[in-house]
Image 1 (cartoon, rainbow, N blue to C red):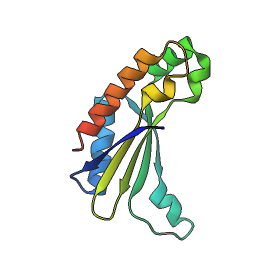
Image 2 (tube, rainbow, N blue to C red):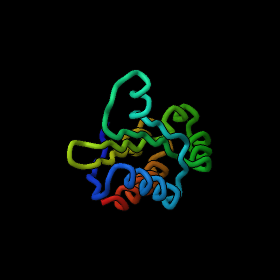
Image 3 (spheres, one colour):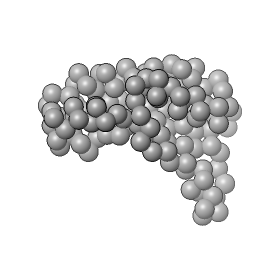
Length: 124
């Protein structure tokens, strides 16, 4: 699976907040937040910042279902934010690649990729 990764000029927590705000501004909704750092702490493992945002929009989901109900396995898409040794990184999934096996969804996937790209541009 192809992804796009950028390095943030901001600290981890600031990057997470910027990405969250950018998701909404891009026309997407945050479906869930997975704080892997906190989850690992529960089993005694300390790690750097590590968060996954699952994002999509109900209107987009309706389009997915109307075109090919089998594609309902794809949303939400993920944005992965992790703290490296010297910088914070943001990784997004490629919607066109994920939706390509399903009929009638390439235009929707391109729109979603544009939305995700605008999120990535906001953290540079």
